[in-house]
Length: 277
Image (cartoon, rainbow, N blue to C red; front, side, top):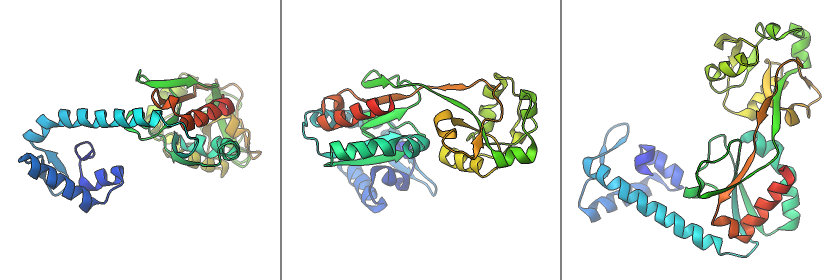
């Protein structure tokens, strides 16, 4: 983890340890092996040649430990304990709470932790027990179930459209302001494929947080792309044009194959599949 993160502080945060504790563990490992694994610089830790040669072996040991943990967890048949769910910030905010209400009734002894992130959690390294993703996983060690697809469309506040005027054609959109898109330049092709030619100058406000995107759209900062289920839930928002081709969004429920045999994981997995699917 220290090698992957590049610094003790970043690795300590990822592992849930304090930096001094991790520093002592690294120093102890170097002493036990009789080699220097890292070169300390003012900004980062760099692997030495010895560290590079041993890194693959350490990763194999880490994967083996994860597999043992997964296999042991998979044997548990108690509907109690901790379940970690990873979902995008918008999914976690707008779709999970009703499901969790049902779960609280059917399995009140479970402790549910939610990671609201747009980054893909590594299930093999136990960063989550269950993940809700918008793309099919490529890892064959994972168990994935496709849930219902949804659509995303353009939404803007009525206040914003009253101010700038409602577009009469797709070309009119090119004169308006957009919000969202963590890296707008990476999304221009998507808009162009739907007949809307934009530039980065159309995006005065950008964020990788979809929940913040929603709030910016609601407060009249411009037009955003939102899931239809979300956008239509707010009466102050409207679709500025019906001629824009909707964007299809896949939804996948993913867990590790070993964890699918664990009763508490299966209960949560099946409930999510039923509620969202």
